[in-house]
Image 1 (cartoon, helix red, strand yellow):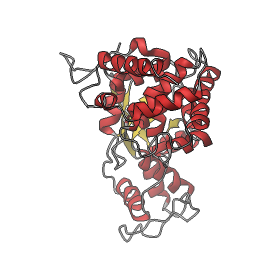
Image 2 (cartoon, rainbow, N blue to C red):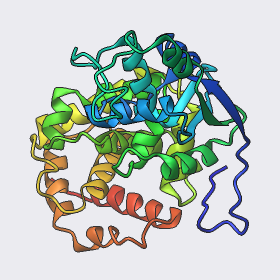
Image 3 (cartoon, rainbow, N blue to C red):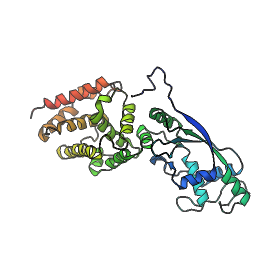
Image 4 (cartoon, rainbow, N blue to C red):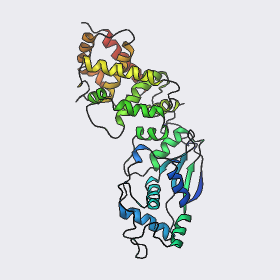
Length: 339
């Protein structure tokens, strides 16, 4: 069932959570044993030496640290890090005594008694205090509603950059489907058609949207974000639609476009998304009966100069009815295109 928090009469989400206190050395051990799942967009360590040192200093001074937000992953049973990966990595690096770049991790810009010390050179009593220092964690139960965890992730993550929906999906619904989307987005033909660099997973969402509408249009109710969430969740391990099916429909469509229209088919065109999924869905549909390149070229020129087609790109035109009307209009335009 799709869920729209903005339109549902009772917006309350059923998200079970509980608090747990972990000593620092237990958190470090879990990091070393890869018991935490850190999403791709969080993996870069961005804290400066002074920031990292001050966090360690906070613990050594006996001051409380902000809580970590974790979710018990219902698939792997590991902990998905919603907020706190910089702190977790700082602890790991301090215990290892080196940053990712190999630089020695010694405390800097802290109280004089601690300045310049590493984990191994801390007095044994201080080292023991750090090992046993408690960090509170708020843990979302593995019985979480996937819709609720999506909104929670969107609100709680403090990476400094607002996450877009596909980045959140890749974190929550991590699996072979997510990996496949990332792989498809790196394809050379796709890169030429897309025509720009994209490090925020937007292009993966374009591909996901095409696949979801092609394979699961009947379940689209008008909320695209929830529709894509549900499609990615239920096929997270490619149990419903196989990798072979996905690659076949995606590659056949983009190879046809490159050969017939050229790599600039979408370049400098307004409203990329509406043009992309309209054309891709039409090709996917027509590939079953055979596509004529000459006819498609003429159709393409008619389409990009069709004011009525572009009127579907209005922000208000996101209902199921409007989407179906647009796709039917595009299909009819192609059918009526004469050579």
